[in-house]
Amino acid sequence: MWSLRRCYTRLSESGGMGYVYKIVGKILAVAFMAGILAGCGTMEKEEEKTSIRIGVSLYRGDDTFINNIRSELENCAKEYEQRHGVKVALDIQDAKGSQNVQNNQVERFISLGYDVMCINPVDRTAASAMIDKAMTAQIPVVFFNRQPVEEDMNRWDQLYYVGAAARESAVLQGNIVVDEYRKDPKSLDRNGDGVVSYVLLEGESSHQDSLIRTEWSIQTLKDGGVPIEKITGGIANWERSQASALMEQWLDQYPDKIELVVCNNDDMALGAIDALERAGIDKIKLVGIDATTPGQEAVRTGKLLGTVSADKEQYAGAIFSIAAAKALGKPVSEELSLEEDKYYWSPQEIMISP
Ligand code: GAL
Image (cartoon, rainbow, N blue to C red; front, side):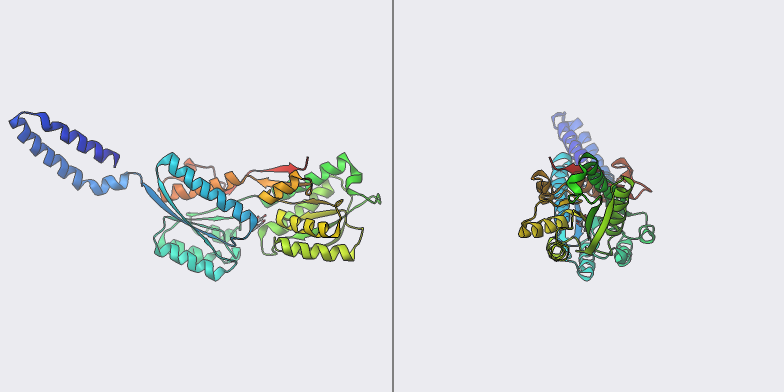
């Protein structure tokens, strides 16, 4: 648009010439315009787009961490519009935990001719059908948070993944406890029997993060020299209410025994805190992962010993910048450095209570 407008300005400037010059000027102008119009198609292709359309499908809109990412994505879109003058239509849909619903959302994004899709898969092992559709429609996909299997990710060079590395989250989480134990063993081994007795709250069993976080968090405690003993553990599917119910049950079953609650995410830690508050207990230490808004608040008030923060601004920023680059037909490498040209791992850090 910019170059076309400049061309119009130059043509109108020829208005002050003498009669002959005016005629010649007009002929030249017509020829010039014809040239421009003939080349318009090419020019438009070469010019940058002024608007992009991105379809986003969330596995569950009521998941606290995903909700934080969603807000950051909305901020990114607003900022991008302001900074680059490119209009961004961000269509965010909630699959409400149903892969069928998500498949329909993907079909709709494709039928509307969106430039790119950002998908937080409901079932990460069932990404293949969505990939088929995207490949047929030639629409790039940025998956996030729930990592499709490698075989699926390798099917097309227009597939990307943004996430927080599970092992890194777990090692950082474990280190929060190791540091606390080294500083003051009695704050964890409250009954002084020489071992820290813990319970474990795990996320969805099919999620790549659950297993890896559990394994590496506990391994880090062992490597860090914390003498530990597992009382019990259970799956609470990332959910506060499920974690609260489990914790209530364990407090009944193992009164005065639990000294530490290791949680695969903050929401489950908050659920355990709910159960502890109902029971009037405030001495048990808990650690989470995510640094969600309520998680950070619990760390600030000392209810949660610590959490691991995947920088949500960078996390969402990476999803958005890959999507925008793809929508604008620009190479992604200019925007971000990706592992194997497709994976972006968001940086993480520890947050501990004051
Ligand atoms: C995890 C996160 C959980 C939950 C889950 C959803 O990475 O820690 O809180 O949001 O993703 O897939």
